Image (cartoon, rainbow, N blue to C red; front, top):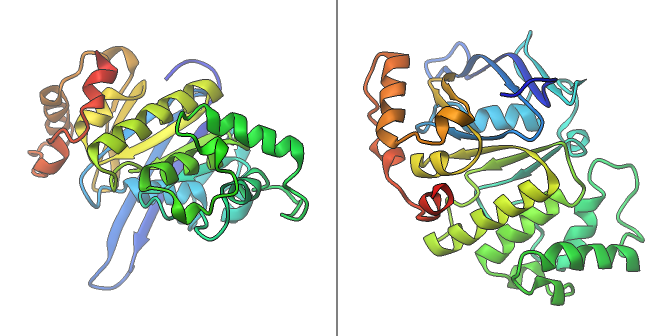
Length: 281
């Protein structure tokens, strides 16, 4: 992480589910994290490591336990509801159907998105100026969506819908972008396209980004920093210089050195998206 103030700061973040029952799970265990402006952090870990729970805490889906604090751009948002955080935090989900409204048109979805976290409502949002803004944002995708503003979103393919979701969460320029395994439900070719578009948008908007993935290849191929989570803790934190030449074998060794046990989830070591190699090389 570079010098200067943190764009995102997590302090003493703990989250326990089903506390006091036989099903009790400590999803996050005193997590501390600082992310600088323009950091692009990839986050890897097995199922249950705490990756999505950490994003949920940041997004305001539920609060951390007492003593935990969340700061974005030096603003304490710990007690803010999810809808209020939308002005600061944008999120793209694993399912392309989440975050977009199938029955509304592309331009209606974008009009709602650009007003997130603001007091003004949806009425009168589709102005000539905004339509021009939407066309410009969509044209950069290279998918032809700028010529389909009045098409219902439900008529789009999964890849087109996920690309639209990316535009929707970034068009209002939030301080922080959360990507929650946003290519996991796409076929490899479509996933590669969405990752390329993600890279383009993140770079153009200078966005601080956290991208959760279940794939080491992708975690190594994207971003300037890599975190590895295990049992609710961040156990590996690798900066840009060391990350550039890191291999899967190096990452497995770092994990084993940090936790003192072997990595047993082989699925996260399998490369699922060829573009990760393309990005690195």
